[in-house]
Length: 305
Image (cartoon, rainbow, N blue to C red):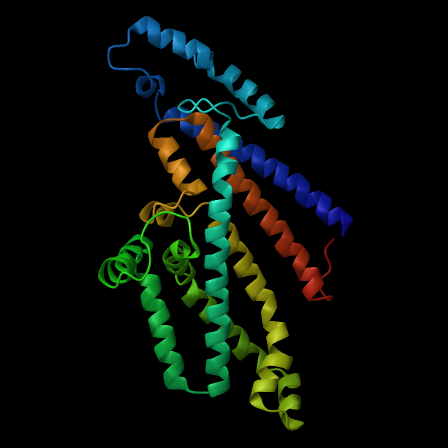
C-alpha cells in the first residue's frame, strides 16, 4: 500500500509540473497583458517600465525558471489587476465552488441511486424507459441553456427562487440542480448495467431461492457490489465539478473559481489564471488518489501494489 501511495504521489507531482508548464506556455501565447493594464494614452516608455516591473521583459526561459521556482514555494505571484496574491484570490473563491460542486454531486448521485433502486424494485420496464428517456433528454440540453430555462421558469415567471449570485441556500438550488442533473443519465446507465450484470451471478439466485424479497436482495446483496464502478465514475465527476464549473458559474453569476479564471483570461491576468488551473489540477489529482484507495476499502480483493 505504501509503495502504491508513494508512486501515485510522484505521478501527481509530475502531473502538476506538466500542468504548470503547459499553463505557462499557453497563457504567454494569449498576448501581452500590458496593453490591457495601461491606459490608451500610455507611452512606449510606460509600457517598457511596466514589463520590467512585472518581469515580462526577461527571456521566456528565465521567466519559466523563475516561475517554477516560485511555484515550488507556493508563490504564484500577484494579480496584475488587483495587486494581491493570486493564490489568495483563488482560495477566496474556492469555498463557493466547493459548495456548488458538492451540492450538485449529491443531487446527481442521490437521484440516480433513488430512481434506479425504485425502478429495479418496481420491475416496470415501461417506467424504466420513460425515466431514462427523460434523463437522456436532460443531458442533451446544453448546461447554459438548461440553466437559462430554469431561471426563466422559477425566477422570472414563478418568482420562487433567486436567479443570480450567492448568499442564501435558495441561491444554490438552481445552479446545483442544473449541474446535478447533467450526469444523471450516465449514472443511471452505469447502475443499470451493473445491476444487470450482478443479477446473473449465482449468489443472487441463491438469495432468491432462500425466499428473500426483491427489495432486500437489491439493497443487501447486489448494491454493495454495484458501488465499485460508481465510486470511480462519481469520484472523477466530483473532480470535474470541483475543478471549476465555468459555464454554470457564469450563467448564475456564482462567485467561484471557474468564473474567476474566465475573468482573468479575458484580462490576461497570468498569475490568477495559473493559480486557478493549479488548484483545479491539485483537486483532480487528490480525488483520483482517494478513489483508488477507496477501492481497497470497499473490496478487500483489490490489492494495490
